Structures are given as structure tokens and as C-alpha cells.
Length: 234
Image (cartoon, rainbow, N blue to C red; front, side, top):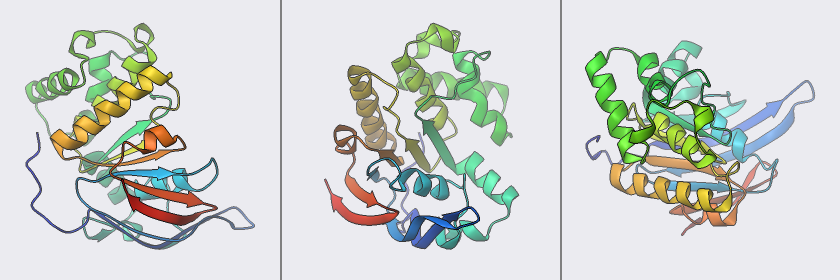
């Protein structure tokens, strides 16, 4: 478990960020400004096409902003090279996706270990220890030798959550993490994310169109047409 961060500065400061696509510069984000504190669980909410996934991708360095600044730990991500952004993602950001994105030919343990392999500089024994620890925390330790095809949807998402957490990132970004699950498994995954947010003090930014999912966050940021239209504490 990472030590509690005593730094009182925000983990993310988003300043007048815009994003435009294509030859005709269709605007997906319009001068979005936000501050996200360490340890917050933030729900980005809005209908499909409102810009929440685009904002999530820009925050995580999966896409680049067309304008504005994104300060991660005080460093402007928009000024970093592609190589530096890749290193930032590998070491400081964990990803949870709607469709799990597990490798079918890898076991549960091998899938979870991927971020450690990408980050490098870790011994085989520590790698094994971290994988077992995080799979135990998400209730999947008995499945570490299973393959994704042998798991239920809810189990696959738990593995995806373990993979996002194993390298002890400072930020977790989750894009519709319950969108491909039935209601019961969706509730279980949300409860697990909330528990991990509280016990590990992980900062989580989750995009969702579901009011039930959004209510799990400490704070709800609503978007429409690429704009932030409300920002409130739960």
C-alpha cells in the first residue's frame, strides 16, 4: 500500500482545455477548467457524445489537447514529449475500460503483471508478490491461473481493476467501468472501486452516463456539448 500523500497540492489542474478533431475542427471540448484533489473519487457524467470520454483521454495522455494546460503533479502534460507521456502513463496512471481489454492468451496473473513489466525495474519475486496481493484485495486470488475466457464479466472487470492498481499509480481513470456488466455485477464493481478509493487513497476519475454509478463518487462533474455545466459534491 502506498503511503498517504502529505502533499496538499491538487493532483490535476486542468486549465482552459479544448479539443478539436478533423479538418473542420469539430470541437469536442470547450475551454474546460477543473481542479482534482488527491484522493478524490470524481464522476464525470453526461450523455453519449458530451465530451466526458474525450476529457478522460486527454487527462490520461491517451489523446492530446488542442489548447490549454493539464498539470499533473505540477507538470504540464501538454508540454511533454510522446516518450515522456508514455513514461508518465506507465508509472503514474492506471486504466479501467468498459470492455476489460484483457489479453486472451495470458492468465489472470500475467494480465495483472503487464503494467509492472512495462514499467520495468522490478524483481521477479516482488512482481509475484504485488500480483498476488492485489488479486487478493479484489477477491480474485483463487483465479490467478485462469484465462479470461474462464471468467464471468464481473470477474474480468475485477482483474482489470487489479491490473490498474498493481503498479501503485497516483491516478486511476475509469471509462464506463460498469457499462458492459449486468446490474448486480455493476454494483459490486462500484462498491469495490469505492472501497479501494478509501483504503488505498487512490484518486479516481470515472466517466459514466449512469446516475447510479455516478452517485458513488465524492463529486459529480456534469458535461454537455463539451462544456462543464455543473460541479458539485455528493
